[in-house]
Length: 401
Image (cartoon, rainbow, N blue to C red):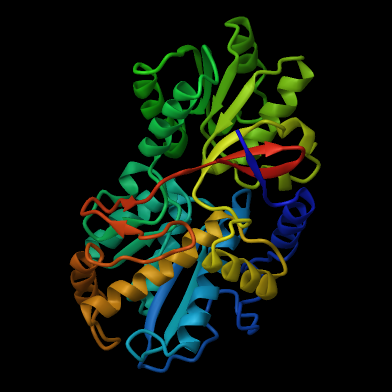
């Protein structure tokens, strides 16, 4: 395999320190236009602008995802407004914190509904997205999640996503491991209490039946037992697994890698897009992640002109390198713009009428985004694009060619 140099560990560490240091009760992040408004409510309502809401965690364990989504969306809104808006009308953007909690996500949704949102970018993580998806469908408000991967995130006709679904990640991971002969015996550790993790695992296990490796251990944990993985790792080691599949988020993955090293167990490790950010975990030894492979839709080191412009503008606005979640949000806002212009909607229309117009329009638009070229959508709400494989080598992210 050949590798391209990607994000340095220093940049990623600086990113997370900035994200968490800047987060207060309201997210505390400075907006791309420098207003410092954390949730958009300080912007003056013109009565002649599209109101787009956003929902995601800007505090708590998953804040690295939510803040990146918020920043990526704000950057796109700023660019669109400066270029004349959507059909000549400006965008007002209001981002609410859900702390990666389903109940708080619904509360955030209600806050946006009271504000008069006409479409929503969110939510960022799967559990909250499923909860908001149900109430937004009841209200017939358009929902585009940048990074909610669970199947049920787009179960209703008002909902679409930018990212890959859990089943696709599970299927593609199993295919990649098998087709590249990465292992003969595979162990899986997954979070049975999380729809993201369990959904990926189920698809992975199904596709594994078609591949040339055997799943020799499948060990679950829950949100109440996500700090000590010694039992799961010991069972993987006893089964002589030469690769461990980790379909969950980077915070728990960093603990798995540390504990595996502590018990002198060194299989290959393979994860999904939730691994993005592992090198930025405070106090984590980056050397432990060497050779970790995971699927991702975005790399900031691409030579693509649009990606490089996005990375440069993002760094200038926020002082850090964007991750895949920022990229998904950036493409999500531009997808909304394209669909709104295709449908010919106007800000004086109700949210429900706008939603009805956007449902067919999303099936007709194509955008050249930073997560994919010729990005399109299917009636199921799923995007059409190819995954990217990333490997960590010598403390840096690298793209596998």
